Image 1: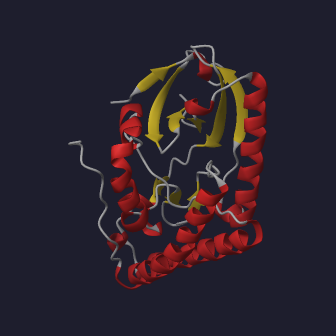
Image 2: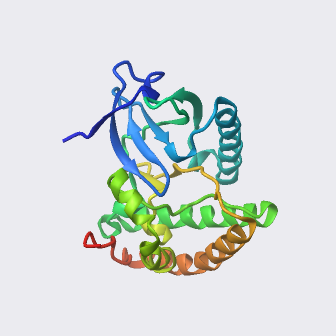
Length: 247
């Protein structure tokens, strides 16, 4: 059953202001337009004045363009930015992207059902994405988030960001999340089998935090190379896991 949410912030894109929530991440709520042509991404925690929101939209657009250029047109989609006022009077930035109706996040993929040729195609693309990200990192000191987190609701997202969930977040970051179980990379259906990045957000933390974060990611890419090779050979990938609801 569709979960519909109503807010005036969707007025520029939806006549009755009701949209369906289809996903959520660490900071973002993701909704789908009624015609299922686009997804709308909203970071309500970043709302501010008109000037602040315009500056934020410009910053997000520049980052998205750079990350899309990093991965190339074959692995990226366009992002459009709108400024809108929500029902509480806060000015928000809306991100509009094409809805990939015939694609699934890598997290949900059962690679054992793929043919050898399909697994080789996926492995080749992931190696190219890793290579491009590392080249971009050496040039700029940053890289796109190829992994991502997910949440089933705003309440769950708030709970997962609580201080007492820090051990789970670290465990998830270092162990559970790998490129083959990504939430931010989508794989189109056969026969195309194209991998596409759908999240173009920057890391909004201190310089020290970002330096450590990207260095850890750099090391984890070597682990991912091994997992990608295992998937290519046999279809094996570590099991999908989620945090316990009993907190």
